[in-house]
Amino acid sequence: MFELDGVTFSINRKTLLEPVDLCLEPGRVYGLVGHNGSGKSTLVNLLARQTTPSGGSLQFEGRPLDDWSSRGFARRVAYLPQHPPAAGHLTGRELVGFGRYPWHGLLGRFAAADRRQVEHAMAMTQTAVFADRRVETLSGGERQRVWLAMLLAQESDFLLLDEPLSALDIAHQVEMLALIRRLSHELDLSVVIVLHDINMAARYCDELVAMHSGRLLVRGTPEELMDSATLRSIYGVSMQVITPPGQLRPVAIVD
Image (cartoon, rainbow, N blue to C red; front, side, top):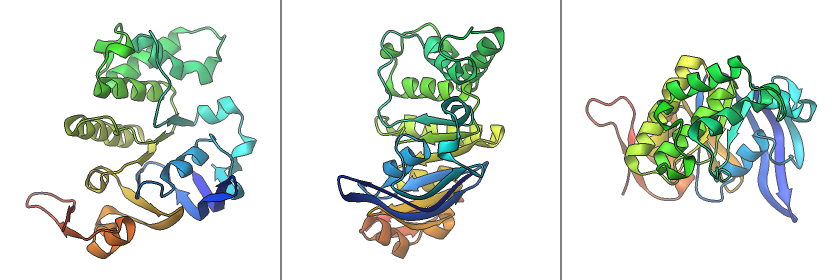
């Protein structure tokens, strides 16, 4: 769905992203991993059309991103930034309803079909109990699920999530990632998610894309990337990799 051919990004004469060649296929969960400042968020911002590449070719479904209208692109790709805008005094239902704007516009009529999609999105994310609560009163984990419901209400095929777990405790991280993976498989959603925890990424993602110093270092399945040499090249620290009894995915432990 996304095809990057030599995509670069520079600002103020500083190169943040070296030429990247990458193809992201439909129906998979991609974990974007790497050290702080490695280029993960820069790459996601380019995919989400938040910034424009300095060079190279970036296409979605065979069309340059510039050829897509804002509403047409939003109907296909939903984006959750690392720091979502303040929800003010919106209720959960009102926030999720913003996901319908690509379909009827800011001044369009909110029809029965829109209401059904909002209710369906909240049911899928188990956020219906927050429908009448103000978003600002919700916990971090509850709030992130409501934002996810908004993306689902958008009916997009591709989700771009920039560090959605950064403010969550371990229990809510597991809950959120399990939900994202389940929805991806049930709805045939493609997902790119920026993650810091390599073990979480290996457990819940179909494929890992590792960045380092603005370069795409390596990509592959968790089983392919979870070895000591590869992890050292990504993070610069020594790790042991084991597969605990009863688990299918490997786990990395810092030496």
